[in-house]
Image (tube, rainbow, N blue to C red; front, side, top):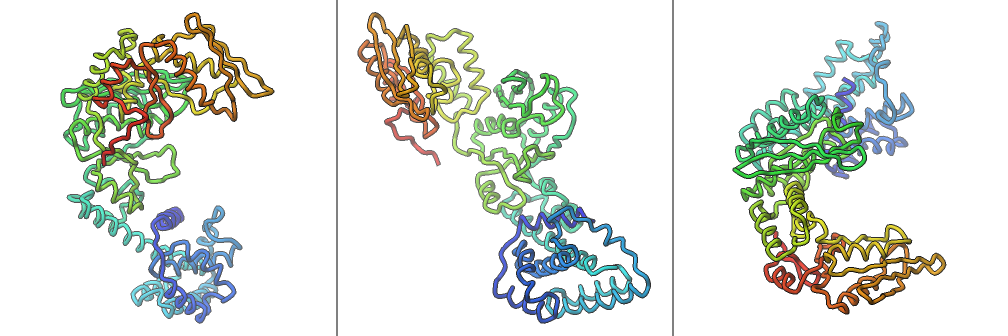
Length: 528
């Protein structure tokens, strides 16, 4: 009973509305007039009564409960580990019980005078008092408050059920949902998903004996959301990421196409065979199905559902298949079901990705890569999210360089930057004898290198680890002076860092004309 009382309080705290201030003042005045609270204690009462900010009488009953609890214990209920057992088990003598009943009946009558309970409720609780159900006032107030909280909880759940029906999130299962609310079967927010049209819950507490078997079961359950998600040929690879971290790479076949997705394993483990807890990264695992839906030009996307925003590793994972309109409605409502943010914009289909990679290959972008490097790049593209051309090309080695936001160190930073520029130029820009001398006193770095028989020197500043912008100008001047078969071009990243690519004039003209990359001087075309 104690846990139920606390859980309902928490649920209602998260889903409360504001009260009418004028109505509140009148009710509080009635409480004072009937000597249920003292004038000097109004601030204490309001402190807890306003926790709920509800447009009904429950907040006043809750405020009275908290007010009486503090009078008894010196602190509010729930502020510390609260133990009601000693109070609930208190045994009174016959005379003590008789006296207590008289006081409780008087208190109940005052609640009615304050319009906090109706005639039916008055009769019910008076009968409870007559049956010697309460040995203490706080026990009585807890019970009457709990009944009011339960009623409010049901009312709010039914309003939310109507909202779900309005947006066809709960349609054919709506009547079952209302019945479940009436029968008090909705114990947790996750229970609501049982009555939504395209939703599932996954118990993440299950132990893993065999990762492939465990994950395949999860993917099959997820695919049950809609026929268009059906798949065959499930495969799993477990590959090391960094020190004692592993990635799951899933491959499956749907609609005649092979889809892949890399999911980061969440916690550091002793070996790749140890998967007892926190099996997969929730955000990553279901994105493979969004790739399928994108290829089908479906209006739906899969979302992770959060039931507790502070819960890092949920015991129950919710997945829902929603339209953009449904997602927006849930985000605005933001009470019991909070969907993850997903992208409904038209993304590259797998066929479009294959085509653009072929075009890049035809103009020689991969001419300096080995067959193994090209195949690895294609694998990387298949496993990752691809929101733009930069992400596709970045999956291949030494094509695009992501310039760091700051210098990782003082000693060799400019030398390392110069080497990276050389790599993406496929040695068209081929500096040798690179050195980087840092002067701690002046906080300046002298970069030196040779291109052919020419020696180059540039003194660059180092301030708070920021890269001196003259470095980029210097590299471009050296490239132009040596008449390289190409230039370095800055790419438009939409604010996601700075990236540069080396292209011949012919490659640049083709890519720009066919919009296969967006350069820094170009404005993006926004897709609503």
